Image 1 (spheres, rainbow, N blue to C red):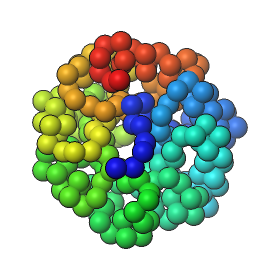
Image 2 (image 1 turned 120 degrees about the horizontal axis):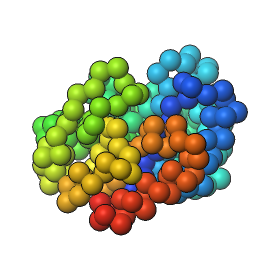
Image 3 (image 1 turned 180 degrees about the vertical axis):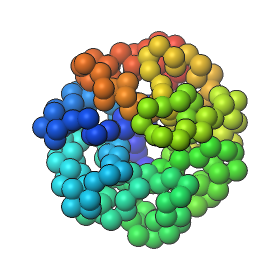
Image 4 (image 1 turned 90 degrees about the vertical axis):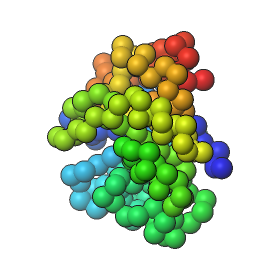
Length: 212
């Protein structure tokens, strides 16, 4: 198993910010203790995505945090990111593994035990499961029950992270679910102080026994 920590998994959203402020918020979140960072850009051109990925990677390297690129294997390779995250409609995990090699991290989004088992069989290193709550970052949100989350955690040998509308006020629902970590987007990205938000979310999860 590769050595990485998904306990506080930060997923970026640059849509409301100029590049300078976006990068400042990313660095603030890194200072707040996020343990892995996913750059997620749905609307940028390839050149724009790569440009931003290279700038974000310089920050994550400084803080010794893995950078994961959402969807785009070409961007992950060009920016020499530590990994890629793939959804159910993206390139199959086994094909992606052939392209990026054994040393890179591959994460997968799953919503059912069957999807989770398939992802692991094909070489996923961790899973993102959700959405636990409705989100503001996706137009269509398919809710995943905590019971399903718990079943997935019991069924697979890789770290499982909960995702979807999570913040320090509502994460108690995840207690005893067996997750390895929490994914956060708006709770950190849109906070007045991303560093403080990351610290508080992590501490809240630890104090409630949700993560270690």
